[in-house]
Length: 143
Image (cartoon, rainbow, N blue to C red; front, side, top):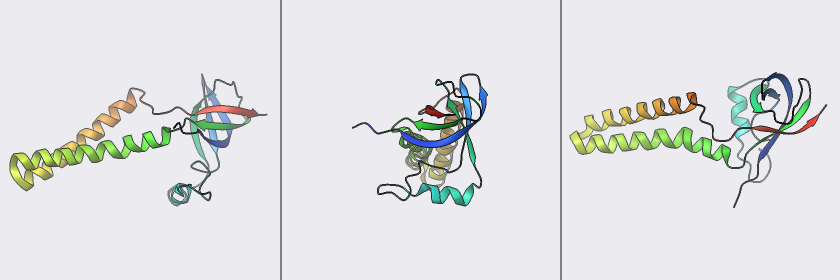
């Protein structure tokens, strides 16, 4: 079962090579109030105010000032969440279990913290090397 791409409307603010900086007025996919929506936009409104800008692939050749519809590949949001939350949690648990088996509670705490630190280092290196789960892209333009 393949997941559909998430779509959101925005305005191209600037261009950078094959990418465009797109400003969107709302966060998330815009399905907050629909059946099956996660309500994540309500949460992001608490922490982020005003419009947000995102770098997206601009294979369609959109120009600055154009209204566009941006899509994120199906499953990309879920994969990003798994990487952002799953890797640190798994590393923390594995480090704690390894520490516990080696030397008790103090070693378990040290192992958990070590696992967590290693997970953050891994994710930082992955991101710096261009690691992306799914690159957003422009699917339609409206001058």
